[in-house]
Image (cartoon, rainbow, N blue to C red):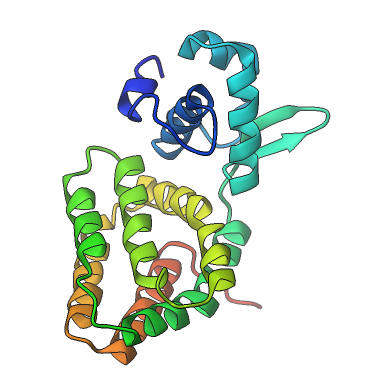
Amino acid sequence: MSDALTQSGGFRPGSLPSRTEAVLDAVKHAILTGELKPGQPLVETELAARLGVSKTPVREALKTLAGSGLVTMSAYKGASVREVDDILARSVYDMRLLLEPVAATRTAATGPHSWSDASAALDRADRASDAAERSLSNRDFHRALYAGCGNPLLVRTLDELRDQTALVSSAAWAVRPSWELEAREHRAILRAAQDGDPELVGRLVRDHISAFLARNFPETPKE
């Protein structure tokens, strides 16, 4: 992870101090690429030494990552990378199935839109060099679909799922690389949005989310 700060874009302004934001990006990138493994302890002193910073920005970054669902915190064991299991995946994707098709339909219905942000996100995903960049670009695409739904609470709820969705997708791709299929589904959703068909947008978003879950985290038949 010695080059992680450079890979994640370095220091940039934001709601967090720039050094904390850079550490946040670096650790998130390492988690989503699998460089930091699920369940791996995240020791502040070790991360600080590897990233060339003090422990303070590392501590603040880990707190933020815990809040977004990428890191778990224990009073006894400290911080560790969150492990992806069927319960997590189904919980995240069940919430998305309940909320995102509705939000995307509402956004598309408020048109006309240029959908330039959605298109640019898909272009970034196509050019991505690793799973972290690809997954985060895909999350940007989905956000462009729901951000204009007109319900700030709905947008905030979906925003809170973004990092956990990225974690689940990156873990799934490590076992079954399916991003090319998902990219085609994204393009179909974008075409429906550009054609001004809100109902089709909602249906395709629902099918897209359902298909990923069924493909990667199928329900175990009950005896």
